[in-house]
Length: 106
Length: 119
Image (cartoon, rainbow over all chains, first blue to last red; front, side):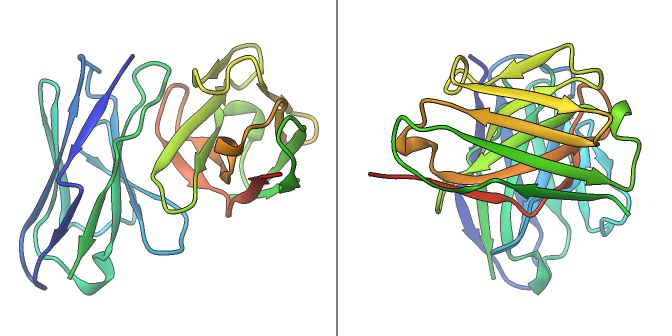
């Protein structure tokens, strides 16, 4: 079955820091990968789709890239409102597996 | 404005059944793949099921296949999840979600419906 390995599981950084989260797929997924942000007590919010395309309305400090089965989400300058858990998701084929999540704290 | 409103959650004993509904508005419901995603208390997101725009193709996570059934009524702009043979481990908030495109990521999510399975 498809596995999405996300790391780290948690991180703490300072306001203004560059933060990087990675996700590795157990097989090729043709860049059919999304990143979601879930703030505490809130509904998930789509940040990135097609591995590197920014969803409308998402701040430009968020970016993402792909290399084979490795995917990266970067926050260029961490802001207080970015405190959240971030999830990657494969949507290449069912099961549409989510990564385990990365909790980002200030 | 896109809105997804879930209903039908609640407390149920193991082995019981429950049907979740998701009322959609603000977009052409019949043109989009829809799905269900769940989140157990304090845990991560878990994909449950998807259904294509016509309702003719459905997909399930291994953990729910054979027990849950996804369906839709495009005339009522409503998505359903029939959950049978519920287990304690099915306890979660269930989110209804709209896909950007067929076979795509989810661009809109409902507020979620809590399902608690306990004796």
